[in-house]
Image 1: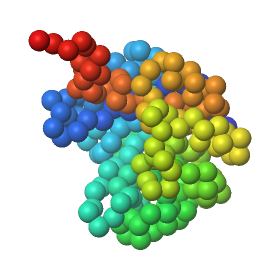
Image 2 (image 1 turned 90 degrees about the horizontal axis):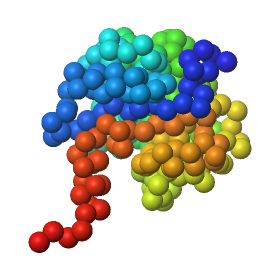
Image 3 (image 1 turned 60 degrees about the vertical axis):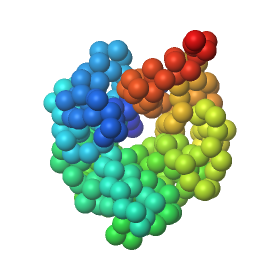
Image 4 (image 1 turned 180 degrees about the vertical axis):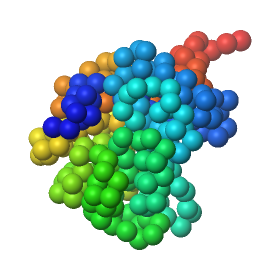
Length: 228
């Protein structure tokens, strides 16, 4: 097993991302979040875009899962949709490239199978396939993906969104695949993380519950009694 894959086993990957409207939007904030995550015991960082990946690489010694969100209103796929977008984050310092591995239309028209193979062969990095169904996961595994993440479960028309992490999908993937299964999406509490591992996850990704101060504050405010 690749040493980086081995280092992820049983660990917490922290996703350090922010929306443009957030006061913590920007590479220096993401680098600070990543450093906090490393100090706190995270095993890896997931970061978006060239600037953030480069800043995080300089801030931590952990493996970096790089994505490159490239939005185009004509296509639903935006998580590292092209080979060029993958190459950019690898050059910025990503050890792993994560991409949307669903069969929805994407910029450039390449299939997820061809992208997975080309990234591994030409860029020499590990590939995390973000999927929404068991069938997509099996396709990605057959194409050479090094790990499968449930990132897109509930965010496409193929599968209903669960209130928390899609543990049913995690269990199905763990039972049918031979590569590590990463549980990502709607993991809001430590108990949810434990449940993900019990369902068969190899590692977990937590983002909002750790690195989104606005959402964290809103969750606490929602629990308050009605104020006069």
